[in-house]
Length: 417
Ligand SMILES: Nc1ncnc2c1ncn2[C@@H]1O[C@H](COP(=O)(O)OP(=O)(O)OP(=O)(O)O)[C@@H](O)[C@H]1O
Ligand SMILES: [Mg+2]
Image 1 (cartoon, protein in one colour):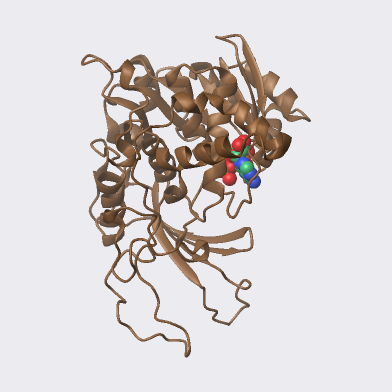
Image 2 (cartoon, rainbow, N blue to C red; image 1 turned 135 degrees about the horizontal axis):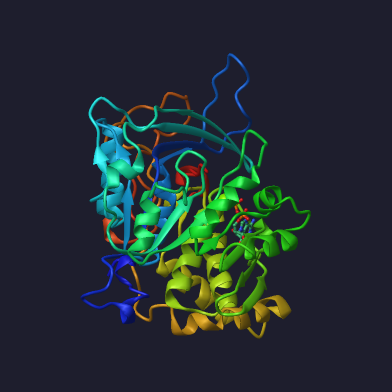
């Protein structure tokens, strides 16, 4: 049974129901990340990284996070005619079960690529790419019916413009709830006008810095109230502190601390959190459970190096919960608090074992450097293929499937907002 085979919305499905749970659109990047670097390379020098990973990034992070939670996910994105695009397409469609029927391949356009270097918890990135050959709304046409659409608010493809109906609004007219996020504003303008777009949204889930900047407030809580004046479901995430939310439709307000974890790569936490929140909302859970669930999904992801392929599947969530439950009663007040807060998982986590999800492999051409001599004297040959966290399908070109995971070797951070 694959991780994707567990269906948390099984009891809501009918033959007439929406084809998808989540529809989303954006730019897919090929992300290549070097990990385990002692320091950033000084100008004019070359350094060797202990590890490398490759995976689809950008909007693929969100699509893979929702799909791994069992949400039927459809992604519209432009793909080039290059081998990187083949890899991203294959990974999304075949490995991660993301529907790409609204995506398109374009000739004479190549994949945007980001190379990322991780030193301690900092990442530096270099990106190259060209604008997509076609606007998302033109490429999509009529979106498929879905329960939710996830958008990043932007001035370029705004929501709620008179006379213009973008893809997310079309999805909304067909019954989807719009969940909106927002990115860092490099211009520093943080224009409050962007928030006008929330008029058509169900939920808004910025991080605390973005929330305070866009609402012109000084605390995450004040930002939350300002957002709750605009959308039924207002959420402010606050990194390792956790998240707070108001759901004015159900009359609930909640603050849920994040599970304590050692974050190797906190980048991308927002996407995984968003995926968990969408799932909990579609399932109709109480607000505190939704925040707690989203929080554990992102807490599991930040312990991995990796953007899209760091997202947890139900197997990861089940393992975590079983450990928490087993430790309750003899791990102090913190352990007891976790066990209490996450008690709702008892009813949710699959009782049958679910297959492990795959993490990022080193290179996209899996066989390419098998057997090659190492370039660095005394170093072993570069491992090309996946670490894989279990499962027969995870066998790799030059490593056994159950090889111990080396977090510095194959995890791939990859998140752009
Ligand atoms: N260090 C951490 N430990 C535990 N949970 C974390 C940590 N960092 C983030 N999270 C979880 O992820 C959620 C989202 O993180 P954050 O508020 O940093 O969003 P973000 O800035 O949008 O993330 P990013 O832009 O890196 O994707 C938090 O509310 C929290 O639940
Ligand atoms: Mg974010």
